[in-house]
Length: 240
Image: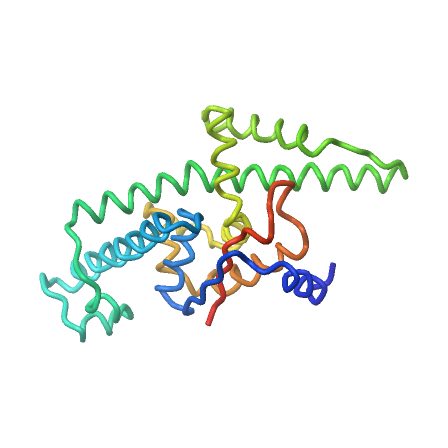
């Protein structure tokens, strides 16, 4: 399907929630927060907002350490390209670490594994299409049966209970297009970089944010997101 056709399909299936985000550190943080908490209820929005604040507080600590100062002035935060740091309310360090660590755990245990299910599903479908094209015989595989085996395989690989893996998979559906595009566009960490995925992604947002947001919507139109994804229930992010 061409990109133009994909965009026509997207317009016929409006998202349940559309958020405009800037092409900067704040936009990257908002993208990550939606992936961690893809629900559209008030509690999910509250968790997203808290994570955005915690990530910026975490970065504030890094800037403060590098500046060799206990106090961050507007001049110092602007020079560090994080002008919002001087405007956000402060959080206690233990709260910052608790929120960031919780989000990192959710991201690795639930979103990373959901991305693995989707990528495996796509490999299976590609292999089936290749066999069909070579044999000239249409091969039919039940969607639920096929994905059940993949979910069980990913659950076993990551030592997760199968029922819990199913919950993670279905919980990820509103942001599955964002998750899939993110993992395919995020650069590999530099040698020796042991920072959390979320913090590293914010620091290098120029390398993935715009491409990832655009690619995510194209994936919706091209129907690349498995049998449970519903375009009308997705959370959409638009770069301003």
